[in-house]
Image (cartoon, rainbow, N blue to C red; front, side):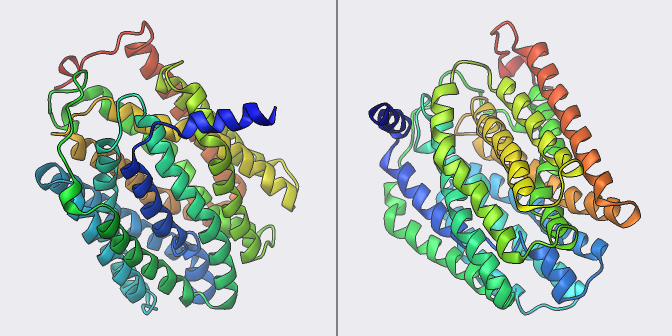
Length: 411
């Protein structure tokens, strides 16, 4: 049994390029310091004494900046390549995180959050293009999962460390987040010099280079991603506040929950993806994952307050995340070439950024005017609608194993 398990994990991680592993290490360093955003609503409400809607608006500023940053980053990536976009985003983001810790008014914190997010989120389209650049057609989903592994392994350290630092002094979060960004940039320069970036062989079954906004199927897909992401972001925005104010959890335990989410993904996602990839269409896995996530949030209205209940909710949401997110990446990647990959990645990142705006605003309004219970019902209903949407998209375009060429789906 032990030998079988070892072989299972060995197969899941084999065949990935050295540069993919380097990108994984860079991402791990970067995400180990990710602790400002998960604790921002608590910081705004408890430390700066903002109202709940104001705390939600600050997160909305992060989302607005993400949209602008993703679009800019995607355009520059398609025109000039992904390498220096990543370097600039990490360095500027690191410095701005430190500066943000000194802002104490709603206006200055809002402006600072927006500018920081513009710079910081321009990293994502470039990084997505880099991941595809260093992978093959056969392991693109696993390469993205490896990147997600680094992100979530970082969450284990960042979440626990963030909860510990928040209990001491919230301003420490900004310094650690900023310094890890700068360290990640320096590490990328060292491990993958610009001279090592070579041109890849084009995928022959992908698109002809048309921009993402001309792909009708992809635009519909993006709409459903926004619905799902709006729900998923509650785990970083309103759910920590719910645990703090309603269930009376400490910041340390909230951080441990975030770390557990990362740990489960690190332990199981690569093996699960290795065994699922290629057996069904990505949209089918996405549909199941979105439904599972919605069920996790709705459980908050049924389970009694307690540590075990929070862990059960986390397991549901994590399983949904594992089933949905890697295959969302594989869906858009298979529709791209090196000529338009930045625009597809930018639009995908923009979807999550738009959700980052809507999630805290919807959450804040639902809580202020009714209750947390309403928020969890709304979240479950939206996830159900998104799941139905993904399945409808699959049945309409891919059920007969006929992948409609991009040329047939452009305006």
